[in-house]
Length: 160
Picture 1 (cartoon, rainbow, N blue to C red):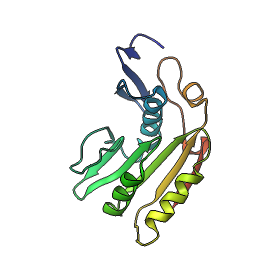
Picture 2 (picture 1 turned 30 degrees about the vertical axis):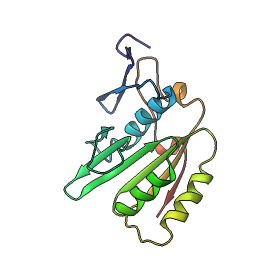
Picture 3 (picture 1 turned 180 degrees about the vertical axis):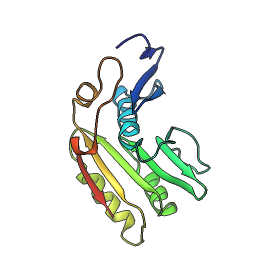
Picture 4 (picture 1 turned 90 degrees about the horizontal axis):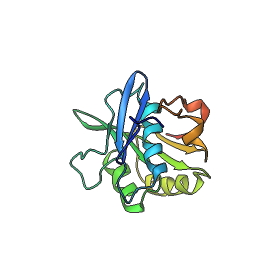
């Protein structure tokens, strides 16, 4: 990585002519930072005002979010998500498009939890489940931080 990419816990990524700087907190794994950057690059074309880890006036803070006049339009979570957070966000924001990502492995357990939480309710926005491969950090991100990725590159399931 060049010197612009790793400045004391800060990582710079680029996609779609834009630049994203993500700060890695001490309790965070590097792959969590990478997943946030990959999600940002994936959804930037549809949500050009995505922001990373900003409060939106509720108990939980999204990893990535784009808000509008009616609240969050898009909300992405990278990695493990607790049951209470999942329940709260899915029920409170039925018109929000969610993207939930896992690193390696299957998203089947997460899909089961989502079905359990959403079965008694009606949603009007999709939930995208995304599984990043174990080598996503080197496969989709070059040494200068440029991200080249599309949803077609990934194992993805859309729940309606």
